[in-house]
Length: 109
Image (cartoon, rainbow, N blue to C red; front, side, top):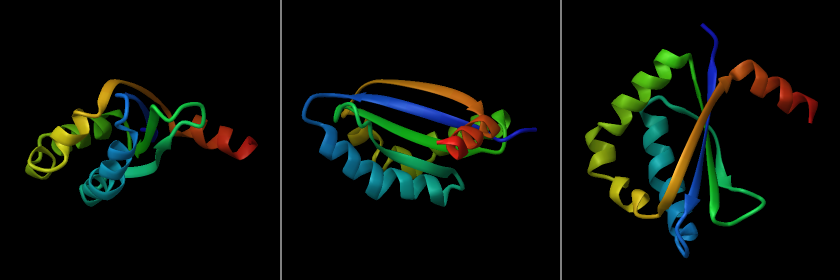
């Protein structure tokens, strides 16, 4: 099966951008990486400081589903930054694409 890329975008609540980024950079991403999730990129959109993106790679769709289930049900996440991170988010949206398309596009830019 082909690797997949998940692109998750967040619309943040007013005045929550700095807090959200701090929590993602210092707590969420390290927790995800320690759980074996490959984080490719995270940060603010160039178009708005209220929009944020998290890009992750998974071995396939099954791995994505299982990895996220395991991570978001883990004690480290639930007793860690979960509540503070969720409090910063107005809305979220995710798309999943084949990794091959992501890599090919990046090479052409």
